[in-house]
Image (cartoon, rainbow, N blue to C red; front, side, top):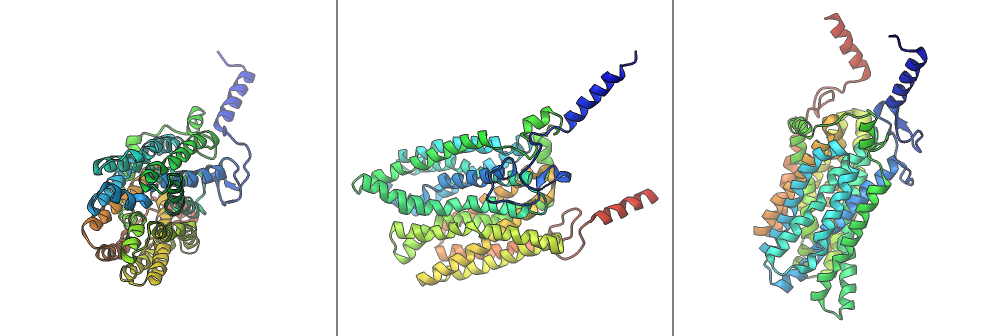
Length: 477
């Protein structure tokens, strides 16, 4: 029986509408339809959905994650004195805390590939706020280890932060976008040093009539409350992708269901993933370690008060305001002028300079010189983090979540290794080892080979013309 022409027309019309479905018909920013409506520019002053709302929720969520992750750090000297803990026990708690983040980053990569960044970002913030609020219940080293392990789950938000920006921004600006959201999120480490160590802690001491014991036990309730509220906000006011949320896109046939296991196999089997894993261990791993070590180092080395050491240490974190973004921006510019070779060259140079400056910082015996070289070292090492994630979206676009998770976990693995070194070595020796490790990691750029792109020393990026030529050759064969 032949279907009525009008019925066929209606079915075809409905099918076309189903194929064309997207949540927003118009955008407040220029997009590339050939890249799933990803934005081709960044409008920092805008909060419009979906692109710029996701941008700001991404860095703010990661910022708050750092805020609770490191809320305890400027208080560690007080906790150590109050509970009678050793230096080794304090650094063991750091290693345990960072280890919790490693686990989360490996898990959250495939979760993002399947569910997007918004839901896991909200869930992790709400979960991590609970142990943060319980910081005041710590009575011994075991309690401290347990609390810091669960608080460390907050660091997993980095995966969502980078994945979200990669979903929202086109290749022309993805390096800058990733670097800005990552850098502004990392800024939470510096703000925490200043806000908690030099702001909230003295305030709470004043409220408790100078009782530091009570002050450090109540301070973390504030960051915990802010984190929980942020998680709820992110869930309700943002979108997973330019065209809508993953559940909506799958419902309307605009997105295939992704197997987490298949995504893991594809991303983890790529050699470049593990090279970037090692390089990120040598830059972000160092930054995490310095976020924990700097206040203690300046207090011990130059005999400063807790408040003064925290204020100086905050400078290191505050460099994220622009340093990581600078790395991403120069990575995008390098791509524009030299293709992937430009990204790799910028990445390698920042790593080398970061290592050299850390070695110099380790030998500074004057407070002014130490602060100056800390600032310069921070600039280059954080820029290297930005260039790392200027490369990540190109490794394998179908497994970006897994790759982001693995590379991000590399930073925490590096932090664990450097944290162990600081447990048993003098600060100067540990810092020197870290510096030489950073320089050594830069050599790994020589063996990064991404399909369709130039390497650091040979090859060329495929262009549309190259692709056409390849097609012609295939036809001839």
